[in-house]
Length: 138
Image 1 (cartoon, one colour):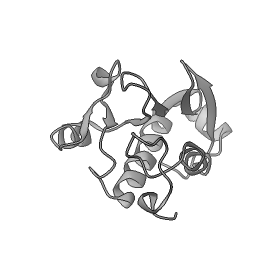
Image 2 (tube, rainbow, N blue to C red; image 1 turned 45 degrees about the vertical axis):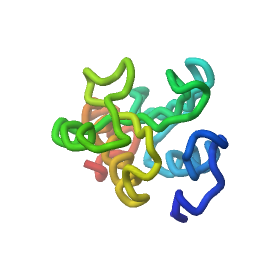
Image 3 (cartoon, helix red, strand yellow; image 1 turned 135 degrees about the vertical axis):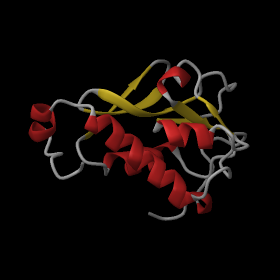
């Protein structure tokens, strides 16, 4: 994937150097990922009907932020970094929000998002994982 930081900004004041369409394109490439726009125009990504990432403007004065599920260890590490906070409404479930696009490099962002997809996929029933073709993912 081309560097997120070499792309146009999502919104002029957001700091994100990736458009929402490019954000959605990356997620669409993940196995069995589905997309829905809900909750005030949030771009919500799911696997097996369970959410693993959201691009929203919740609580940020119109600027978009990336929110995603992470492991307990990743949550502890990421929330200690400048520019990454517990995600509003979802922190108890170990979700983070990237507030500063430079808090992580492109490869790390992609790795954490891919891990979020795998975390949620691993919680699906075996039958559903088989139906979705996710048996080799875990």
